[in-house]
Amino acid sequence: MKLYDESIKELLGTIDLSKACRLDTVNANWEDVGDHNLILRADMAFELGGGTMPAVSIMGVTASKVLVPSDEVYLIGPDLKDIKEDQPYARIALVRVAEDSLGDGNALYNAIRKIEYVRYHINPKGYMTRISARNNREPVRVAAQAIEEGLGFAQVGRLFLDTYHENKNIEAVKLIFITAKDINYKGMSEHAKHFEDITGAIDHIFKNVMMDCKSCSLQKVCDEVEGLRELHFSVH
Image 1 (cartoon, rainbow, N blue to C red):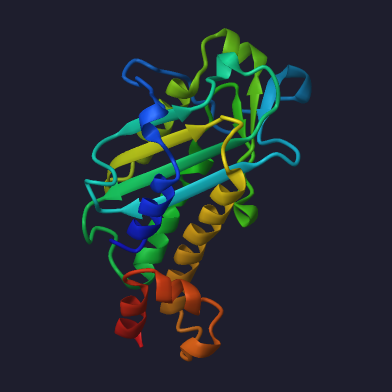
Image 2: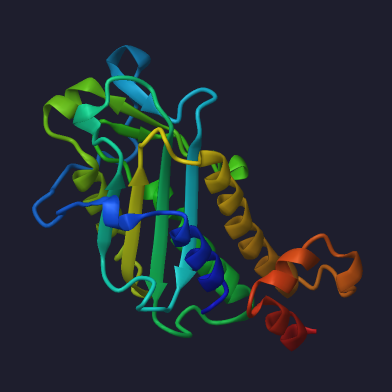
């Protein structure tokens, strides 16, 4: 599973984790309220990535213990209790799986999508995510009462980790929450699109949609990503 590795390295190269805060999630328990997580505008403290502000979501899969050595949750920027107004936001999930555990063919694509869809099943009390998969956007509305009760990214991160690990193929997850204003969110959006293009190319290959690489819209992605071209010719 090296399809995303070079892209993950490039992404991490744009982030200085030595200046990030590594959050302690050991005792950061918080209630997940399932489908009952509606936060009205009147009850919110602020929105992360609301309106026209950046709200970037990136997910990559790897088998590398170097890229994802263990469960880690990082925060770059202020925590929820220190945010006083709407601001940009990004969440990065780098997921380590056991080598060859996701299968191949259509099973590989479905397994990757299953990992991605974890985000739809995480509903921390007072933290309402509104996902737009088409635009790789993930704005969040945060309730004022939840912040008063102690909600922070450690609690959100803990729920993410617990839910990811319900998938037996997942060995570790590196989560990075970003709320700093001096971040190149446009560049992050471009990374998000590239990751999604890789996933889309996997589906494209196994559906036998296009045999002629020269006329395929995903040729550039296949040429750049180690393993995709090999995957292509192993199928055709």
